[in-house]
Image (cartoon, rainbow, N blue to C red; front, side):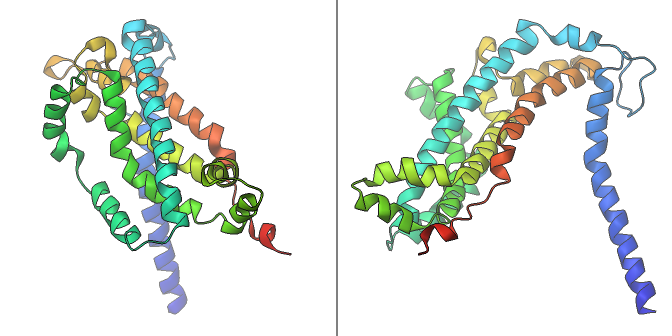
Length: 276
């Protein structure tokens, strides 16, 4: 009886996992199949004939190239700014003990729970006053600020894994805190930098609301906003072109993950470096 019960539970768990997997696989299958389907609709089906006409229709400067370039500028610039600021903020939190560390970290944790829609009205008013509305640099600054709290949390946790003894050896040779951060800590926490970079970039790459509110000129809109153009009036949607655009739109994120996958798979393994 117990064996039958365990078997039933295992079967139920397998079925639940299959349902969850189908929930992820079916949308991806629809995107890939509809991108080459001349008669694409909402159904997931094997196309009657394969065509690249959907890609030919969207591969134009106005539809794809300019929005993707804008997305790369916005998300790339904001990611670099986020990682740099997170490293500078996480270093003293990781290396120096203070009674203000815990309240500061709790404040950061609270900031990560704030819905971004709740602060967009005052942010919009502030950007109008300081003349940052409809500017790429203003949007980059807000993107970086919105991702910075969680990036600091992640960066500090990875920085805690780098033994302080390695820095002390560098200090003995005359290196300062800034030099030890750049030359010792950051190179040794490659997986942490990779995680923060991918997380920040992906979260900003798919953000629709922020650039939709802060950017007004059509020629500055990123791909996350321009994808809305495929939804026409009266429920008419160009499903094939939408799927083809989604494939191209997802490519930079996939390439970024592939580039940092080796770093993600690595570990610190620095215990032996401080022995002997």
